[in-house]
Image (cartoon, rainbow, N blue to C red; front, top):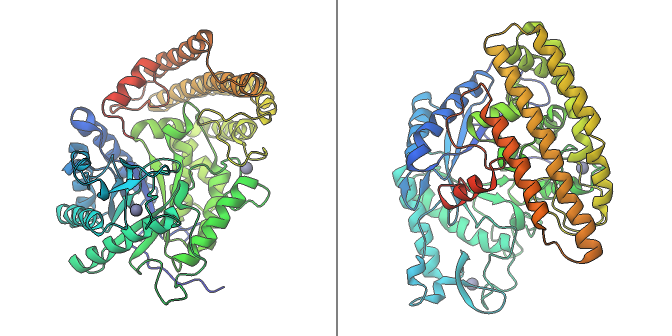
Length: 526
Ligand SMILES: [Zn+2]
Ligand SMILES: [Zn+2]
């Protein structure tokens, strides 16, 4: 099959070998730019620092989600956008319906104009979720808002308009939409918006998020039997395989879960005629909860797969200093390998170990990272269970007898974690001190938080395995809740001792429950 060549944007003055098989033309941080009035500017400064750190390692783009809320630019979003313009770094803008954009049809209109809103599966109109894209007025309102968004940010290279952030079921079931897949309904919005944006500013691009229920239901061919295109040529897929398996590479044929995701990536390449960007989660603190995930070899294999696929950009989601602290190796390896700064995975790991912990303990820290990656495979792999849809370590669990095995695997990590802690302890005896020692202490804290996260994982697995399957209930007892909260509090206390300045809001997955509720009620990034 011939792959259509794709244009690359952004600066290309990155040193190193560009002929290797992991280099991607555009490598970007993807950030949740908005963080509210109070913490927005402090958090944005973390993101600015992280952008500089990334650019030194080959990052050449930034993709800002939710830089606006309700039609108003967030102070943090403004700081980051101004910095991107100053640095001449290409950037995109956008986010999810309901927490990124102005209300296209405000809820207050629902009583008067229910036809603008979607119909749920039960045949009732509802102001929740996405809207009815078959309704020309609703569609016109949405396109109008996206045009205004572009007018407020004319330097953006691409605008994203993501559907509601749910696994599924947030689409329209009205007589006109019924039978149209989520991807099809979404294509109606994106195609209309792409046309309007291109008319406003020729060459402007529009993204098409392939995530949750829009991953499936793509057409086989970009042009239908009637000659109509699925989407116009200024639309780029944004392939976001969040529930993929991170114990295996995205194209690993032995991983049942990734087989599905890779098939959908191949299909996206067809439907979008090669115009595919990728949204990856290598530094996603929300997804990884309290785990200090280090997956350099999976990232390297992913990059090879994505390069073969012919993607234009690969993004890694980051949450400021916290991501650098808990997933810094992933970010460094991603940036260095995708830019060609390093062409060997182990060399990229060594580079990060040297830069972060000093030459004297570089070798020890490389061994630590490799041991951590090996231990993780025991609890990261949720891919071989029978269930059609399974959650993984990042969420609560559907009932499954498969979890009994996973509990055993999680329990088997206790010994490797003791060894990992010992490796760090010995490294600290030989560390050069100063910022290197501070970073090492941060890593020790991160590992201990991950060890406690394993205890929490085991508890959730126990409930899913024993209680749901054998007793038919998933109700948590008071004792379970108390255990979970106590573990969270211990993690929170350890996090506070980290000798690395973390300014913005960070611990979405780590905070004690009361803190988490505060986040939810206040300016939670999601
Ligand atoms: Zn409809
Ligand atoms: Zn797998």
